[in-house]
Amino acid sequence: MRHVNLLIISLLTFQLSFSQINEIGIFAGGSNFIGDVGATDYISPNQAAFGAIYKWNRSARHSYRISMIFTELEGIDLNSDDLRRQQRGYSFNNSMFEVSAGMEFTFMDFNLHNGKPVATPYLYTGLSIARHDNYFFFNDVQTSENSKSWAYGIPMVLGFKMRLIDNFILGMEVGARYTFSDEIDGSEPDADFRQQFRFGNINNNDWYTFTGITLTYTFGQNPCYCIE
Image 1: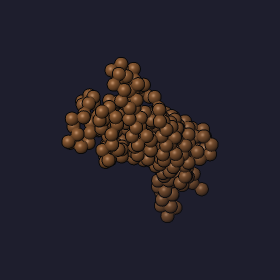
Image 2: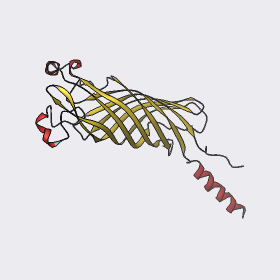
Image 3: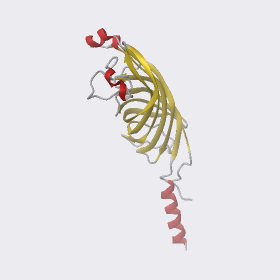
Image 4: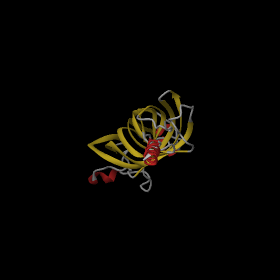
């Protein structure tokens, strides 16, 4: 009977050693757009971005993650290094709400249970979906189609995070989103009857990036590594 009890305790201890820790918090930073209108700098935030983030730390090396971020993407041809865009002089603003879900991988063990200082670079990828307004350019002016669309994409994020104090985790990250849409900047009108207003490189889809910080609070049952 004593051996059975020890076996049960060992199994419970093994299971608890992999118990999840939850993180919930905020994202704050900036966004920039890369497409057929505006500058083509990959990391050049020009509009505020903010949102919420949740993580389920499945192990010390990977987490399931979901985020919701709001921003207003902006593109201004006059800010481009391309002389042709400067001469064209288009500009646009587009409100966007993104939901992203996927998996975060750490380069080193990120064990929140031992109370020691911990920090690591990380990668995140998954799927994203962003709600945006539809526009086209008429007489060189951004003109609303009075409709909205969803832009599906793939997030590619590189970041660094560390335990700040107690249960708070501070992260800094840069994340590009490759989308399967060319409609965000108005170069590809959503309505078929407005296709005569399309312009730009029809073989390249839109990109946008988020650059900023995350501040999350961890909670949940800590594992027990000892047997009394």
